[in-house]
Length: 505
Image 1 (tube, helix red, strand yellow):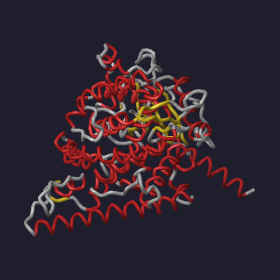
Image 2 (cartoon, one colour; image 1 turned 45 degrees about the horizontal axis):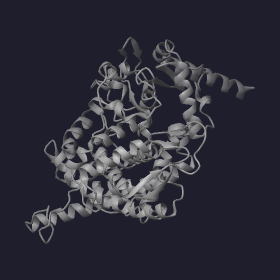
Image 3 (tube, one colour; image 1 turned 180 degrees about the horizontal axis):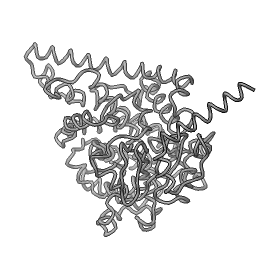
Image 4 (cartoon, rainbow, N blue to C red; image 1 turned 135 degrees about the horizontal axis):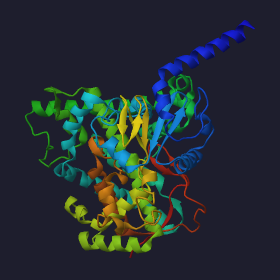
């Protein structure tokens, strides 16, 4: 009896505490549409025991039922889901709203306070010193890496083209993108395409999976539950490998640079005077902030951020692009004709950044792919104070979840939104001028994707190489039913990207 009374009083006390703490959030949230919630747990039951595809369909149904701005409660945590372009503009265009939402806490064990997850003064300072790293002259340094790794990718695909079998290209693209980003970021090769069982490659797969689990699994969202789960032990093991590798590369490169300075040799040249490619790490080693060089930890956070953002996002974009080229042979032919016109028919000829920039129709195809399949299907901001945007009050502490996936498929923003029509991006429409934030696959405003030019060049390089060697064909037997996705930090296809290849003569 005493135990039951203690539990009852404790529950009432907790409820009163939570109500007082979240009274404002409760008040303003009540003015928004959204599914019915329950005391303490909110709407958590909607997502319990849901598989990743089921999670996606649940969110889709909520968007259809509740409109362009609605609230969800995950326990005491308030989420406001936004698919309204005007509201998105009000949030993304303002330097007031640059704090990332709680979901980004799941990435911090790996990335620390790097550019993706950093806040306030530190974020502004690092954004300023990193932005020049993506200048077009620097991008030219990376084009050779794109081309070399694309050549390895072509060789890995050859047995598939010879057999004509249907295969899932997504895992192969992942390994290619990982090779590209590792060499671009750190100047080292992990040879993921050839050694997919390497410790580093497996650690990357493991940590991205754990981040994904924490995104949709309500029980794993909260540290006190996560820390006693097996996921925490798996995360620690993966981070030991990832941080250990990055730290060793940083220390090795620091020592090399120091030795080069002692020898008074040009650190950009090797022993025979041949210009050496500059990795993202090299630029960070030379950078200063407030007059001091960056610490190893600060450099590691930015390199790891580049690794995280640069391999999964391009994997998603390239894979869905290959899928659409297979389904639309007329689009594929136009892309191929443009590639031959700009680059020529010599398959082994290296491609320049200037040539990649000339592939304008391919760029339209990439944009249309990202409209339907944005690599980052949602991103979030946290409100630090009460704010009114487009007549809606967003209370302090609320997590704002913007969803470019559903915005790109909204018939109010795009005519025949499910049609794959790259030409729609050839001419800016009046709708685009009225709602420039309706298409935001790279986010927008002060915290837009700093590496979008890098990503566009990498995608163009790999696709132009693939199409010079192969024709991309649909699978012999396609998945029936509606498209299904794993909608996490990165958009993934539930059933992979099945395609076939045939060699071009």
